[in-house]
Image (cartoon, rainbow, N blue to C red; front, top):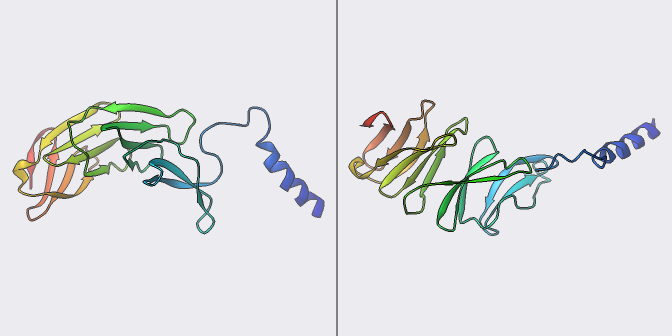
Length: 178
């Protein structure tokens, strides 16, 4: 019985060394991804809770990053530009520029399926999708306060909590509604 366990302990790691076994991307048990401000990078959390460590950076030289729920995408700020990163779980990371107006994003919220994100910078709110880029831009001046919370609804509408004013629903189809 001992020899069977010993054979398994040797055979399973050796399978990763076989030609063609390398699929690229993140390897091992990955609990999730984080934006590491100290190294200005997106890094995987490798291992299980209680025995995890930060893996090698997947994307570097980032001023900020907001990770999508699917763990494969992020919006990232680098050198004053915003990028949609796709392929964080694979060996081929794509950087796609997102044409946002000037200003650093203050809040970002993702749709549950990671297909779209709302980006708030003082004075404006943008709805961005992977497929179409910037879908809608809203002026926030008429909302009467600073946006303190965001959510993206399933129908690509943005829900914005405005301090002292309430919750607004904004969509590309019409005016903001309370």
